[in-house]
Amino acid sequence: MSELPQVVQEEHMDALSLPLEDLDLKSLSELDGSALDLIIKDLAEDNAERGTSRHSSHSSYSTHGTAVW
Amino acid sequence: MREKAFLLTFPFGIGEKATLMNFAPMRLFICKIASRCNLDCDYCYVYRHADQSWRQQPAFMGLDTVAQLGWRINEHAVGHGLTAVDVVLHGGEPFLADLAYLEQVCQTIIRNTPDVQVRFRTQTNGALFNERTLAFCQEWQMTVGLSLDGPQVSNDRHRLDHKGNSSFAAVERALALLASPEGRNLWSGFLTVIDLQNDPLEVYTFLKAYGPRSIEFLLPLGHHDMRPPGKEDLTLTPYANWLLEIFYAWYDERPQTIMIRRFRDVIALMAGAESSSEEWGLQPVDFAVVEANGEIQAVDTLKVTYHGANHLGMNIFDNSFDDMYTSPLVLERQQGWAALCAACRACSLVRVCGGGYFPHRYSTLGGFQNPSVYCADLMKLIREIHRTVTGDLQRLQNRAVLEPSDHF
Figure 1: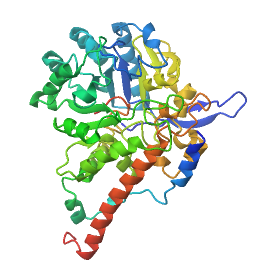
Figure 2: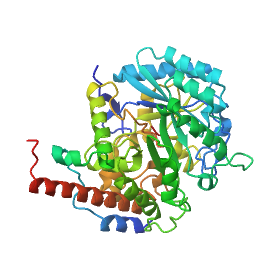
Figure 3: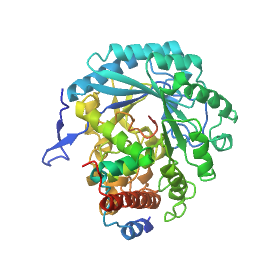
Figure 4: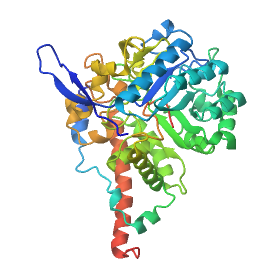
């Protein structure tokens, strides 16, 4: 496994963030119907669920790797 | 009711100072109500790998065990202030069980969980799924995940019955039911194991045609001592390449209604949100597995590593789910970044990949203190998704600067 740490070191990235919250309404509307839009809505739903404390996270999903929701 | 942070005094070793730690409560209970399966998939982590403990399990979970399970779930939920939990009827193949028995299972769990809302789920191979099964799922509002690897030629590579016959025709009948107007609201989507021999776009196009809510493409279970197909050289990235073909197609489609969970999780974690799956990110694992005899176990996919790997020496008759937090195997998966090997801790992608899926890290020599056997694939996938999405966002932001929004 000696090759792995070298790969890890070579692949460092300076930044790994997606500032989705910075999008303005016009930009958001351009995403309508896109895969990114689907994900943004899913994350918003997850946040809303968490806010109610009805179920604190992953309302739509099982975290178990072998079950899909 | 707000959830309580669970504080437990945990002695790290004799003579060491006890430390207070936060532990994530268990929200999901994988219940092995059937320990046998009607299929004999050659990659199955239950029957075809190192751990063979299924042989000592009863074929089905007894109702006394189910009652105790319900009681323990309720105890855990009350102790942690949870108002809802998910209970997955799992196997083996859960629908090997008679529907009358499954009715009793659900009734027994509900009867013994008076203080918490239980949401039922199931994962099935679909081969025994029929109109009666669908009616049962409707009655209990039980969501159904279906395992299928693609069109028949893809599916038949691995998912055969005990006589070596294809399961495809039977699963196709289940698929017709789940994709129908009656089944659609319960059908959560596909669980699809990647085989590099299959054309990724052919698999995706086939699955997409049924209009699933979601697809999860799973990396084949393997580790450093049992290399997955195509990973003899760990620096190669055949699985990233396979997945990226689908990613580009999926990302460009509009309207997009299918959630591909692997891509969703990478993007969610980059955006600072949480992963939906234990396979990504650094968040603590929040589920427990209960075997047919009542044993409490760690994640069942650990069975591919060594015999007994997922065994905690606990059962629901003698132990509460809180007792799991005394097991090093569980604690390791509660500690996120701190529990990873040095190479992963130093890597800037770690908050997305989370060090890779726990079983994928294993080697006899290093235990779970290794990067994932899929490390190079995960890196390529993450970097490429990041590049694609940031490029898209940058383009939108540049346009917003040039053409100021009239919404403000």
